[in-house]
Length: 390
Image 1 (cartoon, rainbow, N blue to C red):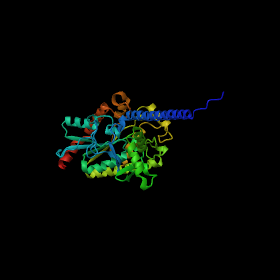
Image 2: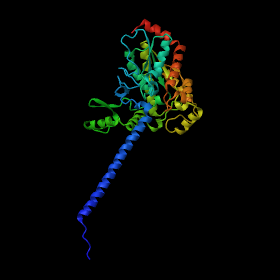
Image 3: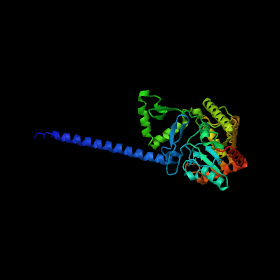
Image 4: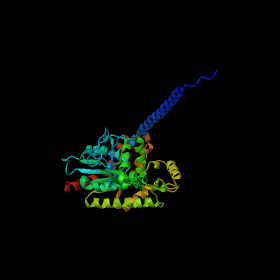
């Protein structure tokens, strides 16, 4: 009895079934990958919620400073005025003789993760006004700013804000590390794009990576990547964990320090000519909290810019003060006060253990209020402003 011929339509049906199964598997895999990536992206956004990621669009590119707070930005917890400062607009009818204090620094000074009314500048203003002093405290803090950017930004704000006292908050490590991305922006059409985004593209095609970059900014993962690029810039490995000390700094760091020193010197000269006081408020880094943590930092980062093992934890602060003095500026040191914050992380810090919470900002306001009064500055500033009202 002969074999029954195989129905060719059956083979076609089997192939069709296999193909559909394979396509379905691919679709499920792709969908799972997309969903998984979206979940991871949201998770990264949650982790970075204290780094400004909770306020997308708060920063904008700047040819002069690299980036600045976007004027007029609003979120549930952050208000940026028309000058890029984190406070309400200076009213047109503000007293012509009020004392104005302008504060500049990085994300700690900006107050990442806390509401406007909890930032130390607001708390300091409230303390001073409660004591009967007509003082307006302005917050010029910008996420990831270096001391060089702070000095440049202060120079630009002097004519408009007309402050009586400028406070720049600096640390011996992070705010003094070179960032070659500062000011490295390229015009593509009507927008500015970080130079590294388009540097390998011909001018006629730069709109492609610029558009792609703009679209990806909605991703928290990409935001973190750009934050790393922006903060690190083109830094060489030996400068990645640089901290000021008496050891000879790498060439790239030395040039950056010279530029910072020149900017501080220029600010001091310009301010003095206008009758404005300038103070550098010096603060320690988080890894200076205790001897064993400092020792560990030195050993782990010896090849990437950290001072030589055995360097005293107070040496970076001393050298920073010398740098400020050589620039012709004056300084206040908040070494002990900030160490006290760091030693009580649960009380003064947010979950990231890098940014102060409301209690930390309140303690900073108290410390600054004490420094200003011990220096007997308010009376002097008040007399000057009364003699030359705005």
